[in-house]
Structures are given as C-alpha cells and as structure tokens.
Amino acid sequence: MKLIFSLFLFLSISSLVHAQWTTNGANTITSTTNSVGIGTTTPVSPLQVQISNLGLNITGGFRNSNNGAGNGTTTAGTAVGIGFLNELNGNWWKAAIVHERTNAYGVGNLHFLVNNSIDNSTVTLNDAKMTIQSSGNVGIGTTTPAAKLEVYGTALVAGNNANIDNRNGNLPLTFLENTGKMLIGWNRTQGAGETDFISNQGGGSVGGFAFYNHSNTGTENQVMWLTGDGRLMIGLSTGNTGNNKLAVGGGIIAEAVTVKLQSAWPDYVFKKDYQLPSLQEVKTYIDQNQHLPEVPSEQQISKDGLNLGEMNKLLMKKVEELTLYMIEMKSENEEIKKELKKLKKR
Image (cartoon, rainbow, N blue to C red; front, side, top):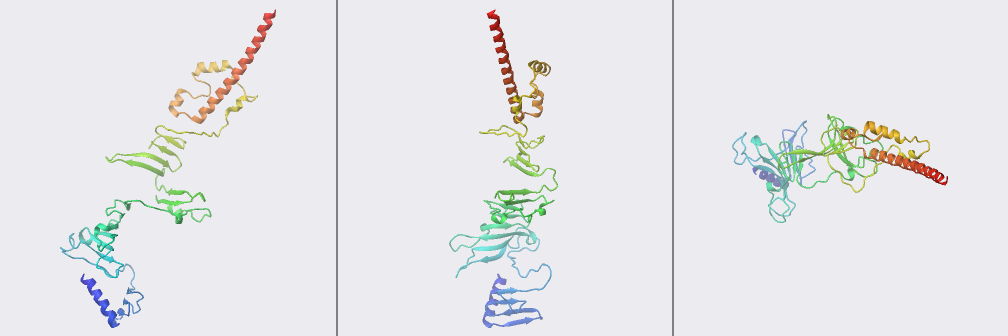
C-alpha cells in the first residue's frame, strides 16, 4: 500500500512541477505534462519504464507482507495484484489480476478476476474467471484445474480461421510428426467444410482415437476405438478384427443395410456356358461334407463368422441353380407325359 501511495504522490507532484531529475547518468526520472519516464527522457505513455539489459527483467512489482511470519512460511500475505475500473469516480475494482499465495516462499496461483455485478461491489478471489496454477495448469471457470487446460463450461474451438485446406500443398502439417499431438480444424478435404480431428500417434503402434467411459465408482472401459489404419471397433477393445473396417461387440439394429459387393453377382449361372453340377454330384458332395458345395461349414462360421455379402451371393447362386434344376425337371416331366400318351394310344 505504501508503494502505491508513494507512486501516486510522485506522479501528482511531478505533473505539477514539470521537472526532470537525473541521477547516475542513465538513471533518469522524467516528468512531463502527462507522462512519467523512468530510464527515458521521452516517455510516450503515462508511465514508461525503459531498460537495456539482456534476459528476464522485472521492471516493477507488488508485494504483500501483511501478517508475514517470514520466508518459508505460508502466511506472508494472501493476495496482491492490480485492479481495473472504468468509472469517473469510485473506490472499487471491477476487474483485477492478482497473485494468491498458497505455499511457502510466495508460491501461489495467478487469478484473473471479473465482477459483473452492476453495483459498487469490488472483486474478490471468488470472482476468478481464469486461474494459472504454479504447476502450470490453466483453469477457465475453475480455480482447481486437474490438467494443463480445464474448462468448466462450454467451449468453442476452430472456426473460419482454422481452415487447414492443403489444396495447394502449403499446409503439410509436418509439425505434428513424432509429437503425439492432435490438431482440430476444418476443410482438410479441400472443400467439404467438415470439422477435422488430426492426431499423430507418436511412439504408439496403432494410433487413432479411442473413447472411454469412466464410471463414478472408478471403473473404466473402452466403448469405441477408431484405429489409425481406419478400423472402427465398437464394444471391443481387443481382438482380431482382421481386415474388417467395422467390428461390433454386440447387436446392431438398422432400418436399412446396403451391401455393395466388389465381386460379380451370380447371374452367370443363367449363361449358356455355365456348367451346372448334376444332382448326383451335389448328392455325393453332401454325403461327404454334410453341407452344400461352396457354402461355409458350421465350423467355418463358428470360427470366422458370417459374411453377409458373400453369403447372400452364394444363396442367390443356389436359388438360381435350383431354378435351373426345376426347369430341367419340368422339361423331363413333359417328355415323360408325352411318352405316356403315346403308350396309351397303342
């Protein structure tokens, strides 16, 4: 408080006498009509402190030693800082930047305080809107952040300035390599306008994005994992998914599912050059293997699962073959009927 009063008294007297004091050559204190300069004779702001030293230079400070019990204790002052008020007259502060002592030797947290009450109440530590802890953790909406950045409330990121379109090759994102970091932006697809989450897997072997649920009783389980090579696992944290792009550990319900095969649909069965197996050949195969030709066995299904696209293709092939068998049998029946008519006429 003495420091603030002394500075105020100095500024008041200086503005009245319009004088200049010079001590030890470069150590200059200059008072002009509206400005005070320390270390300069030509201040360009109400208060200008000028130094010419390399490295970190702290040109001023505030100290609170009220009820102090000495260095190394936790009681040498609670908080000290600077207040702000845009008002013609008033003895209160609506905003402040203060340092709160929380440990010995003055270790503590830096708070940014804002009081939005429309009255003459001044800020308190309860008005902290952002806090930087001595550990380096930053809290917005909380004074006890548990991570390098914790936001208690909603948060907006990216926006139009986060365009990471690499159409001209001018944004290769090489700064992500070997960092394990993630970038949030938009429009990486060069025109679709989507929101992009781009991660670097760092030293890991798989990478991607994993989603976990941490319960209130301390249990944790992975609910979804989109791996770095584009495979999506839902309800599965481990297991051999092979080359499948989607693996689900549980049921799936949908109003419609479209399977688009890359292999040919079996309409070739109806072509003239198709070699239709005889029914005797089919019977022999069934007697030996206990399942239809080309159709997976029970053991294969139990081991590898059922490929819906391939199975529907095989089923359609068997239906088409059955149709040909029925047409063939109908033709044979017609021939038999004709022969029977001939025999009756004799």
